[in-house]
Image (cartoon, rainbow, N blue to C red; front, side, top):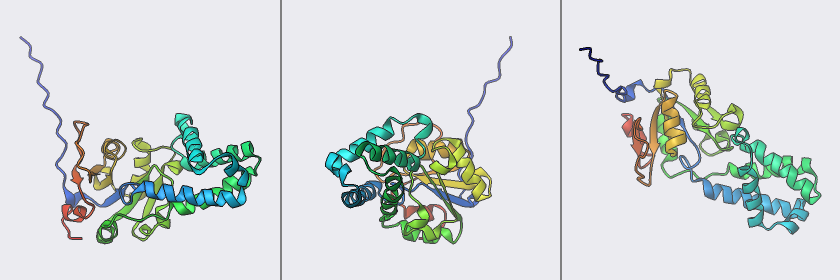
Length: 248
């Protein structure tokens, strides 16, 4: 009787902190809380509209304008949703045309007002000291689906490179954005540890691209994806240097 050899399950190699040469970070809700930043930026933009495009404020109050923007972005085709800057500028042009304003003015200066405020972030308490420690030992990069520019934030001085979905042409968990980060890092994928709060976009995306992954999970949520699992789970950012064998 012929017997088919039984296949042993493939087990991922144990996480070895000493192999890591580069760390990449998600930004929003990993290094700072995002919703206070967005609320601040939207309020700054609406105040600008009152002075420079009052016709829009006559038609929309602040809340209804956010609802209109949200509906516009949700209706965008899948292949455009990774580029939040382009989508917002297109929405601004359509908004201006609807309200009889100058599309160029709204999509350029108006967008810039929002975007400057979008980068006025307040990092989580341990982010600064963590990055200070890690930057002495590793190359640091950012991989973000949002349109914040880490180099315009208080944490920018710690980073060597940044990859944004709009420029990459793909958003996490698409492997293309991770591959571009690997090229910037200049090391093999398994020498990169990606840190992020989103279990799908950050953790599974990184693992599927060959990276190692740390899940920032301050709310102690259960892991619901089976295998593979994150290499590290962090309740606080300050735990990361210690997990990598150093003190913050």
